[in-house]
Image (cartoon, rainbow, N blue to C red):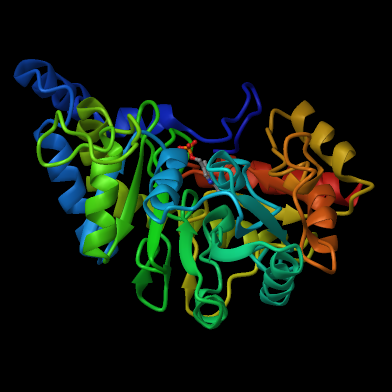
Length: 381
Ligand SMILES: *Cc1c(COP(=O)(O)O)cnc(C)c1O
């Protein structure tokens, strides 16, 4: 049956996921209420075990948010004033926020025009900029934007040459893979987020760090609970209150059980979009060997037409979003931080051209066909 635009189409559809899960979430929550271990209860340990296995790494540490996950790694690496950490300008603010929070300096790197991920030539320029300004370049935070893993093969040698760590910001790419390796297994450590709108989301805030480094893991585990030592009343370092709630772990365990199927459904939706829209706009580019998890399905459209296209779609009940309208180097809190030597023209252009369409595993063919027809019409108008 053809979709009738009687109501607004959801951008992501958590209600559809909830009805598919039936009473499993309520049952899981009821189990937590029954045992009463709200902080670091048994579901936390079980979720961490499953996370590590899913990503193919030794350790996973759950925490309170994706932002805290990034902060735990940087704090464990003792990032401090005078240090410079390279991160993209075209990302969510949290990537750079954690660097600034520790008193270090984020240096903004440009984006690749095809993948929208960190551009490696600009990365090299950013390291040179850090040195020229008298800072120590200590780390790189590549972001797997919109669900596509960054080019870690190209980033790793640059990190090694300069003795920098790689912290993967996989807040949008949990479930993605590259040549059979899952997001979560690249670099020294990976931070991810379970914010409700991410590919795997809980019902509140949540995050995790994945790593194969046992020492780093031990320090982060201490930092997560106020820097506690083996005697919990003798705190051995300045830490955080960064635990995940047991309730969120219980919810995530139920969602993780169906996540593999959801990743496949996302891929199917993305493939349908790309086949139908490739002659009308620049559709997402996925390099050979990569499998995106499609946190966003993002088109590049004519900058002059974008607002008009989005308004027309809105009038047809189709929500669209711009991730991200302002690169970090132009935002009030961040504009005094350096950008890579030759500037970041691609990131600035992407901010004017990108437009994301409704994307979730429960998008039906008829609703998607309606969206496709209206997007085509809006782009041709
Ligand atoms: C969502 C997001 C974060 C932060 O995650 P929270 O769980 O909201 O703290 C960090 N980086 C990127 C790229 C994100 O998309």
